[in-house]
Length: 270
Ligand SMILES: NC(=O)C1=CN([C@@H]2O[C@H](COP(=O)(O)OP(=O)(O)OC[C@H]3O[C@@H](n4cnc5c(N)ncnc54)[C@H](O)[C@@H]3O)[C@@H](O)[C@H]2O)C=CC1
Ligand SMILES: O=C(O)[C@@H]1CCC=N1
Image (tube, rainbow, N blue to C red; front, top):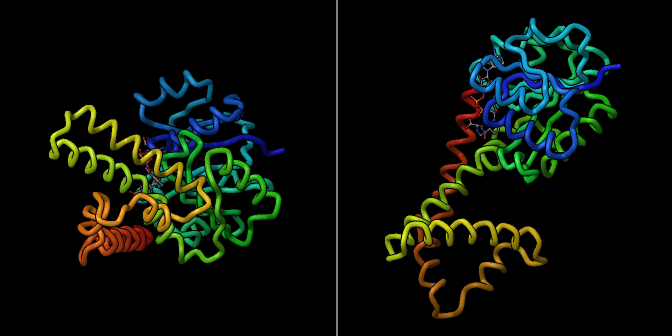
C-alpha cells in the first residue's frame, strides 16, 4: 500500500510545509525528501526525515501516496519527469509551483497521473497557511480526502474546480504574505519617521498587524466595519485613511500589484 510523503525540493515553501507537518504529528520516518543542496541536507536530516540528492536515490520500495513537487517553476520541466515512476492507483502528485499548469504535469508524468495543482503560502510553517487546491479528473475522492487532510494540517483549505483561477489565487494568497510583511516594514519605518525608536516602532507595527489579523479572523464583523470601529469622526484614524483611501491610494495600488502577480503567474505557465 502506498504510504508516505515524497517531497521534491525543500526550500522556503517546501520547508515551511514540512515544518508544519512535522509540528502537527507527521512521523518523519514516513517522509523522504529530494533536496540536492548540501547545506540544507544536514538540517533536514536532524529532523529525522530521509534526505537524498536526486530522484534515483529514493530508497527502493518507498511507495509514497503523495509526491509533492516543490521546485521552482523554471525547473519543473527538468525535474518532474523523473517522478513519473511513482505513479500508481494510490499515488497523487501535488505541485506547488506558481503558474505551472495541470496540463504540463499530465505531459511530464503521464495523462493518467492524479495531479493536484496547489497554492500554499509560507504561514504554513506555523499552521496558519492558506492552501488552495485544484484537482485533475484522475484525483479520486479518497485522494482528495488525503490531500485535504495533508493541507489542512498546515492551514485553511479551499478547493477550486476552475484552474484558470489559480494564477489569481497565487497573486492573493500565495504571494500575499509578502505584501503583509512589506506593510509591517512600511508601518515600522513610518513610525520611525514620526519620531519613535526603531525597536519600539518595529514592535508596534508587528503586533498591530498580528492583532488586527486575529481580530479580523475571529470577529463577527467584517473588515470594513472593523475599520469603521477604529475610526472616530474627526479623529486620528480618519486623517490617515484620507491618505490611504484617496484616489490613487492603497486600493488601486493593491489591484495593480495583484494583477502584476497574476500576469507573471500566467507567463510562468507559458
Ligand atoms: N516561497 C513561497 O512563498 C511560495 C513558493 N511557491 C512555489 O514553491 C516552489 C518553490 O519555491 P521556493 O521554496 O520559494 O524556492 P526555493 O528556491 O527556496 O526552493 C526550491 C528548492 O528546490 C531545490 N532543488 C533544486 N533542484 C532540485 C532538484 N533537481 N530536485 C529537488 N530539489 C531541487 C533547491 O535546492 C531548493 O531548496 C516554487 O515553484 C514556487 O512557485 C508557492 C507558494 C508560495
Ligand atoms: O514569488 C513566487 O513566484 C512564489 C509563488 C507565490 C509566492 N512565491
